[in-house]
Image (cartoon, rainbow, N blue to C red; front, side, top):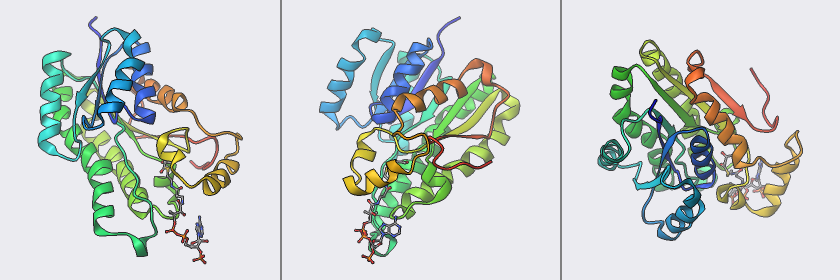
Length: 248
Ligand code: CAA
């Protein structure tokens, strides 16, 4: 069988890079889609995945731009084939309390974290449905479940992803397409390392398993949900947070 083709938005980011490697290790042909303006990081990423010998490639996208998402999927089709797996992992923070938040800080987060998932998913959903197979995994956040001080924009966008996940799961379940979300807790990424150290230390100290998450912890969950054998799991949220938020 030909390799399943996976597109990972935010593919060169902290979680995205680990997700790309994990999906490639599981035999997928992976396209890491991200902002090309991050030229230094793109070059570094290409070094990091050199041993995958073309099984992981970079493609430019701005997920907040519908035309850019359309162009990306067109390029993936031409270079790698039809998209079987989409991981919406592109995400940004603009943390500040609501009383200080500018409209731009609100809109920027919504555009990348929520509109981006819509724009990309919209490009692949018809093809997946027609072919009778698809896996969509949306990277949400523990903070989309609990709310976090200073993150009204981010928490709203990540909670929005859960609604998107559940609604779309119902729409495409009969077509062999599953839609799930993974909600990471605090992991060793640049995004988390950017939190002021004293605040970050307090947060990490509150994680029941006693350590910060590793990007690979998240990647394994994405791998599981995107597998061919996971077809009976849809519309769920899989929290991977070290016990930071336990619920059912
Ligand atoms: N709960 C209650 N009160 C708090 C608080 C908290 N968690 N944090 C701060 N406060 C209080 C402060 O003590 C302060 O009180 P006073 O006015 O009485 O002095 C008041 O709230 C305002 O605090 P600041 O002036 O510090 O507010 P700020 O706007 O300058 O800073 C912030 C706020 C930048 C958001 C800072 O609190 C912060 O960085 N918090 C961490 C946010 C965070 O966890 N982000 C996650 C990023 S990683 C990620 O998002 C990945 C993922 O999915 C997990």
